[in-house]
Image 1 (cartoon, rainbow, N blue to C red):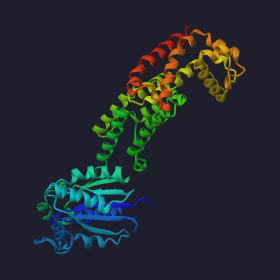
Image 2 (cartoon, rainbow, N blue to C red):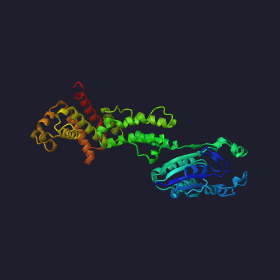
Image 3 (cartoon, one colour):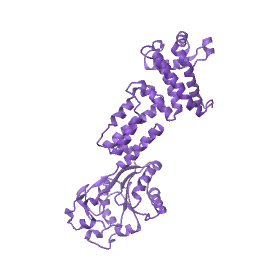
Length: 435
């Protein structure tokens, strides 16, 4: 089971006791108290709380009697004592960090958090309230780096907005009950925006999406939507990689995707909506469910994103599929799915038959015993027209797969569209309703 980790930075100010929105009946001096009581109440000894503080913050706020000017009795008590009073099972510790006044010290803080505390698979709950100087900026970079290097997950980013109550000086003048309730803001959408941006970037630049962390399956609407969104687009990756033309043509993946990318959703911040619109635009060429447009779009998708193996493989399989469907009445194997698969193999072999084999009628394997159908197909204008182009695709695909070096990458790249477009032209000519 993944370890849960609470991370917070302790400042040097003389913090004022108040109530926070997660518990309006329990006053706290430190925001860490409010967040830890809520977040870590069911954590175990296998989880951990890290409070990062400078030497100055440690002397003023971690230990008791650290503040020079005391306004209230409660201000004598440091965070360590306050956390001990919570009687939680989860262990906590103070971690000393540098002041962060130089680039070297900032990198030292980075190393202290990353190397000194985080473990593989940690689920991170981050309190950004008193993170000072550059820490709010570099912490997002640090946790993104950790997600990649240690497979960690950001589960929550919290900010206690004490400033809504006023200045500490003014708030301290009021009775505790009259100070109001400070809101706790959930900033997790910052992480969500990073993840959406990563999805969109991978999709636009590479035609792929990486698997998202398990946090996206958490039980809330934003995460469920992102999870379904990525699953639907990831299916396109899978179907292209495995030549599943039937799945691509069905188009369930794009229908699911468009269900979850609804314009004007009030649940999403504007930047995330714009990212979703970008993804939607990139996939707009896919057609309705059950359309060959989906296959042709997937082939173009593979080629335009430099997936040449998939592009040539899909193109070859698509030609075979269209011919097998055009001449379905000649299928000698039956009408079920297995029979149609055997017929596609049959068509593929017919399209690739060398002249000398045709002349001698030396048809082996699945072709054996079907001389009449083979010759009928070979004499069809459709087959006659497309065989040379199919052979070009087949040779180039085999060159890539078998690594024989017959074609350079440059040749494979520039040859694809002239050959493939010629095939589509022939298919559209012979396989139209009026053909």
